[in-house]
Length: 180
Image (cartoon, rainbow, N blue to C red; front, side, top):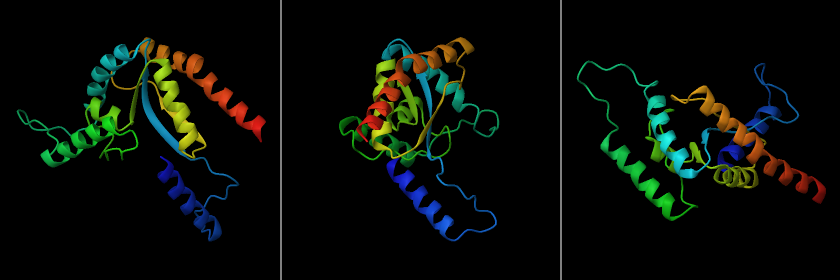
């Protein structure tokens, strides 16, 4: 995310220095990331439910195929996903796998790539605090309603985020402001 934010800011500054009729003139743009999220009481509960919901999510994207034809990720791409997921599990600083399309990877590969964030409030809090510290972004968007998650499941996930994750981020921001 840090590299993507830096690349965006570089392009934004070039555009501000030499604007065209289509250039938005802003004092400070918003730049950051969006992640699909599911928060449950435990990591295991969240992972189990997110795997099912993610499969439903993936089914929303592919083009229809003729009867009897099954869509498959090309073997080389699947091998890349698997290798990157394994490397990420062994080395947290490893480059994340590149995903093509919003639902190209299965739930486990999406979780390894951190495009799907799943876990207990403490697991998600740790991720969001790391994102805030490392990404050099100035916003973050969590998508809580996706796949076949029910309204109650999405609402509980959002409630856990607002009650147990956001206060930690607010406290971090307050400490940073006091240190200035």
